[in-house]
Amino acid sequence: MSDNQNVRVRFAPSPTGKLHVGGARTAIYNWAFARATGGTFILRIDDTDPTRSTDENTQIILRAMRWLGLDWDEGPEVGGEYGPYWQTECLPIYREAAERLVAEGKAYYCFCTPEKLEADRKAAQERKDTFQGYQRTCRNIDPAEAQARVDAGEPYTIRIKVPDGRGDVIVHDAVHGDVTFNARELDDFIIFRSDGTPTYNFATVVDDARMGITHIIRGDDHLSNTPRQIMVYEALGAPTPVFAHISMILGTDGKKLSKRHGATSVEEYRDAGYLSDAFVNYLSLLGWAPDGESTVISRERLASEFSLDHVSKNPAIMDPKKLDFINGEYLHAMSDQEFADEVLIPELHSHDLEPAGECLHEAAWYDLLAAALKPRTTLGPQVVDQAAFLYEDDDELEYDEKSVKKWLAKAGAREALQAAGEALAALDEWTPAAIEAALDPLPEQLGMGKGKVFQPIRVAVVGSAASPGIGETLALAGKDHVLARIERAKELAL
Ligand code: GLU
Image (cartoon, rainbow, N blue to C red; front, top):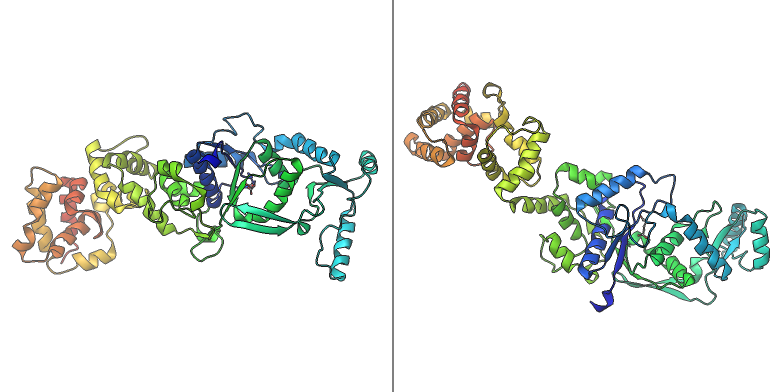
């Protein structure tokens, strides 16, 4: 794309909390856009709010970015030619920029006290003025006089001078189209507070301009800030970047995503067992679709096909069921061995079913367990409950009451267990195929339905009637354990 040459985009989180789902999606879009256009992805830490920004949050954000696999080309840890990448380190840069604007007559010192501003607002309200913003009281103070008052130590803010006759400010948004704002409504807004700190609208533009940012992709809660930011670009004499404001993420009830809907931070999803690739895949589709039908989109495809013209302006709904489905698709696409090494064994370890750092069984056993559980798993930790029966002592296995009622406490169950025990005891080879071959003839021999024969065996060995195929289940449990459990279950069977 010729108009995307030298794309420079940034993700600029404020470290006032963890990285949330909405921020993660913004980061993904910026990263994908940079990768798809051969551009540069910058990470900047917007830590100008000293009361709420912490180093700890910055570390959490960097960790989450790494887990998401969103490598940045410039920013913390990697450096770059456009530093500093922390806003707190840029205070002299903002001050210098603001003072330059004052010197050029594009901004001015304002000495109005909060009381005066409040009185002006009330007066405007009383005379039913449609404009109740700043009355431009200090706009025409003679610059030499203003400088003298500053030098004398009088408290001041710095305000931008919205040029007379500026007319409407039109934001050409790549997602929303043209959005028009009335310049007069923008007020001569403050760019530097009386405590000597820059406002968000100013610091952001100074940084975006000095970093040569070409496209600003961010949440549409910032759309209303954009006309003010355009005024700052114009005052600085810097080119205005392309804006792309992406929609909010809502919960399934249509309300803004919050704690009420469950996990909101990236690390909560990581800890719940979601795969990074699946999570990035899912978030990338909240508002973007390459073709309107694919649900599984590899990181490579995202990084080559992402484009702003396929981003929707409609709010996106975060649906945990779809996320689980996509996570399942990634798990099911793994080989049995990958599933064993990357999901199964780490989960068994982290839930203390296997001693720390050790494996109790041989590799083939884990591969078999992986093959049995993989199709039944959409989220890694689910394997723990499903495999737990393999780690119980035979005489301590707990039975699910409903399964006992339905399958063991039934006429014929004892007979089925007896026949199964005999057929299995006679086996020399203990493989799923051999086990199935031994059990297959039983329903006919006993004159019973398949369920009546196989389900009592399942309940005996697993504790409940839900398990993978009977051959795999019994093979995994081991011959001695299966026979002991069948013996024990006979006591409960009718
Ligand atoms: N630090 C700002 C935020 O987290 C950045 C907004 C922007 O992208 O301009 O909301």
